[in-house]
Every structure is written in C-alpha cells, then in structure tokens.
Length: 172
Image (cartoon, rainbow, N blue to C red):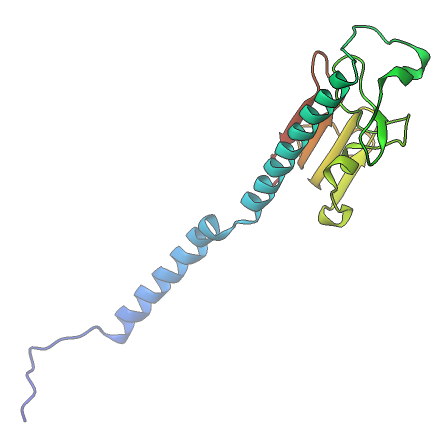
C-alpha cells in the first residue's frame, strides 16, 4: 500500500486560526442575535398597552351607558356623579374624557392595575398616583417618573381630550 505524497490537509496551526476567528465572530455577533430579553420586555409592554386600551374603551362604554358624557370643567360634588360600578368594584371616571382614573378616590377606589389584574410580582417597578399609572421594568424616579428614560408604560388618566397610554423603551 502506497501513500501519495500529493495529498495535503490542513495543518494544526491553520485549524487553530480558523477556530479563533470563529470564536471572535461569535463573541461579537452572537449577542445581537441571541439577546431576546429586550424584545421580550417590549412585547410584554405592548401587550399590557393593548389591555389598557381595551380597558379604557370598555370603561368609557360603561360610563356612556350610565348616561355620562365628557364635560370641560369639574362638575363639583367630588365627582360623585362620575362613579361607575363595574360589578367587581366601583371608581370614578375622569370628567374630561370618561377614562378610568389611575387611582380612584371614590367608590371602592379601583386603580388601573385592578382592571388589568396584574400580579405586582411580575414587574420590578410599579407606581400609581391619581393621574398616572407606571408599570414596567425600570421606572427611573418614583417621585416624578414621567421621563423618556426607562422601560415602562405611562398611563395618563387626565389627558385632555383623551387619556393616553405611552410606552418608554429607551432602557429595555
């Protein structure tokens, strides 16, 4: 049996160089393709935004069925005429837009999170004031969290002419 001397293969050095180059490429390029955490957070926030918008539409419909309509100035009397019963609790809607108040002061004092039935353990950060609900992963400053930094949803129940649901994804 004779071996031909014309057959050549790769040397060990050539194989090591190729493996090193592939390693460098995988270290620099793979995180861009593999890091799905940010995408998952944004998808979750988009889902909650859709739930909030559906809730807002249902609450507005319930308020209109009760005979309420938006007015430009506070009707007084603690807005007691703007309390709507939802079957599982009651809360006032904002007189300007019939949106559910972020944290109600009347009725059984439902807040937006009560309508969504969110588990507070699902998110690192939540904050609620009478006007705003913040739900997400990184709310920068809980004393005045309205900012473009972080990874969360802002629900503004006092918006005029309509309430707003905004997603901040800068730091997702």
